[in-house]
Amino acid sequence: MKRLFDFAVALVASVLLAIPIVMVMLAVRLTSPGPALYWSERVGRHNRIFKMPKFRSMRIDTPAVATHLLEDPAQWLTPIGSFLRKSSLDELPQLWSILRGDMSLVGPRPALFNQDDLITLRTSQGVHELVPGLTGWAQINGRDELPIPDKVRLDAEYLQRRSFLFDLKILWMTALKVLARHGVSH
Image (cartoon, rainbow, N blue to C red):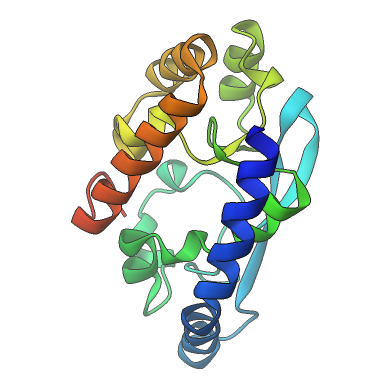
């Protein structure tokens, strides 16, 4: 049922958001050199690597590490990168990953391929069995501000509590946080 719900919502959202998606794509291309999409290597279910698209919010020469590990993340942002991140518009292409089945609407956020500490902790807690999500329990409880052990604790809590109603609650809380632009540090 979760996969069917994910697919239906992602399909409807892709159609309804087609014009904003094209507008963001054009804005990225017009304000910085390089492609509109950035295909990030991420860790999916069972620690399988997949390519996750995002609208590019950082320069094309940015090191491939988690943003919080950059000395000065702001120096790497494109002219509209901060806006894309704070509004979460950079996440819209992930609807493609949901349609493909690499991601779900709700689950732990997919780790970067080189976030060994996060991957190891999630695997030890069984979180690697989950399909990663566009949003998740940890995402709405701190997002960029959470230390990795706290993210994993919340991901493990989601693993234990997951249900259709809990997913709906997380989606609702995500919408409220995105509208308030809450929890984004860069």
